[in-house]
Image 1 (cartoon, rainbow, N blue to C red):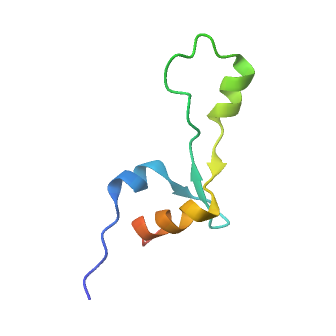
Image 2: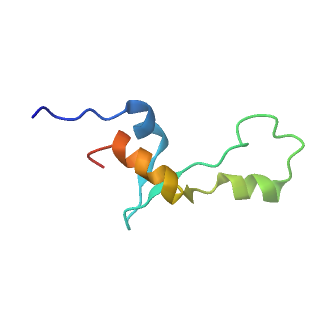
Length: 65
């Protein structure tokens, strides 16, 4: 059986945590940041866990992570 290919777009967006969960960046911290407060921007900077429903799809896109 041939090797499975990793979806490169998913590999750039998601990382595996030490406990095995997939981590992702939060949205809304790309541009138009002038009117957003510092607390909000700080909160958006942190990583968060991918939901269980989406983690199944991410796992399929990244077979070796």
